[in-house]
Amino acid sequence: MTHSTGWTAARTQASYDTVVLGAGSMGLSTADALTKQGQTVLLLDRYDPPHAFGSHHGDTRLFRMAYAEGAAYIPLLQDARRRWLDLEHRAQALGLPYRPGDLFAPIGVINVSRESGALAKEVQDSIDAYALPCERLDAQEAMSRWPGLSLADDGVVYLDSQGGVLFPQACLTVYKEACLAQGAKVMVGQGRVWVDPVSLDISIDWNGEHFTAKNLVVTAGAGAKDVLDSQLGLSLPLQVTRKTVAWFRPRAGTAPLRSVPPALPNPLYEAPLFPGFLAESEQGTFYGFPDFGDGVKLGRHDGGTPCTLDTVDRDFASDPRDERELRSFLESFLPQAAGRLERGSVCLYTMTPDEHFVIDYHPRYDNVVIATGFSGHGFKFASVVGEVVGRMVTHVDAGCDLSLFQAKRLTGNMDDQE
Ligand SMILES: Cc1cc2nc3c(=O)[nH]c(=O)nc-3n(C[C@H](O)[C@H](O)[C@H](O)COP(=O)(O)OP(=O)(O)OC[C@H]3O[C@@H](n4cnc5c(N)ncnc54)[C@H](O)[C@@H]3O)c2cc1C
Image (tube, rainbow, N blue to C red; front, side, top):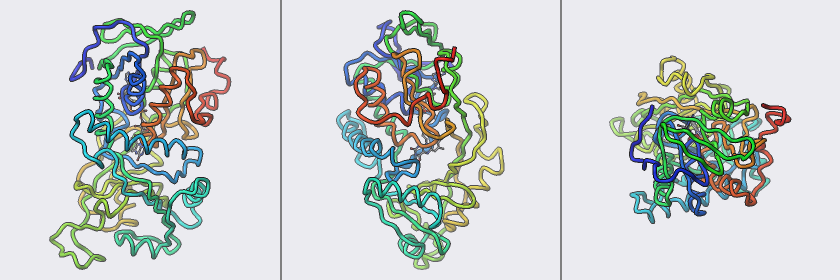
């Protein structure tokens, strides 16, 4: 696909401080950080973001502060949360039609597990490590607070009051408008990049035009493995995975909320009274969102079908399991949410073997920064990843510990790679 939509055609300047390859969640936030520093930036993408062909569509993303993936993430999360709130102020300063809560709705997230479950322990560890303001409820307490929940006797719920819901299309629209206002140029289409091994100059052929740059950032999401392999001589063990989400209309006014007549909509799962949720169960690990007006959204975090950006089956329900496994979880845990299927969607995770991100320099080029492998939990970090990658490009101290995200943990000695 080669086209240029609302984006400015990049014809005025043939040389840039930095080219950002992949203008999605991480690419736009990085370009925002770099243009704020006064850099000239060219953003390249196959599609015009926000779009529905990568990892950032589907309306909503969870922001969790009590982080089962490891307490090491929490300083980044604290910074990220401040930056999302700040982005809402910036949206208003840019004259965009977003109000507080349109980018980030701080409605809390519940983590649902068994008392002996791994999720309960991991969440408790992160709470203890950073004294996070979380509330622990047993099954009975949780079901009386949220009558739409159905839990086993040994169920446990952690209410993460700093958690909430991000709206990625709105977030990326603000970043995109900020980048354009700060002078970034964007091109939608196809091409290739390469690095001169001696001078380290970056060259780009894109839509038949040629550009050069001092620095390159690779934030190509589900396309990163191919770009790194075929254009930059770096093989990372990234696996793209097909993921499905669906929106279900709660059944009208049924027990236990008997005061609601059957003909009226069921308020049991409505935002902001019902929070976002992450639940570990025998059926798998599921996450979801309260009803913002178009139903309860549910997705499964584990599992998924390996694919590539180009081979993924984008048709929800082409596999009957797409709806069946989601509905089955709802029947057990949020039984009155398991009403009519409103719609489904297919999205992509880019997984690393240990599910931690890759944020690092290319092993041979210290003017090439890679941010990829966000393993299905990266969006909430985009606001801080952009800042961190921006500092790496300019070789300023990143201001945080990035050792968990080094590429060499996945590749061994990368000097051995061609
Ligand atoms: C169903 C689903 C639910 C999720 N839920 C959550 C959640 O609740 N909380 C959370 O924090 N995270 C969540 N995530 C993960 C999060 O959305 C991703 O980690 C994040 O969006 C990844 O950002 P990215 O910039 O790497 O990818 P993207 O936002 O997809 O950006 C990559 C960009 O690169 C472009 N591109 C690819 N190949 C090329 C190429 N060769 N040339 C040019 N451009 C290219 C793409 O078009 C795209 O615009 C979820 C993901 C999915 C799929």
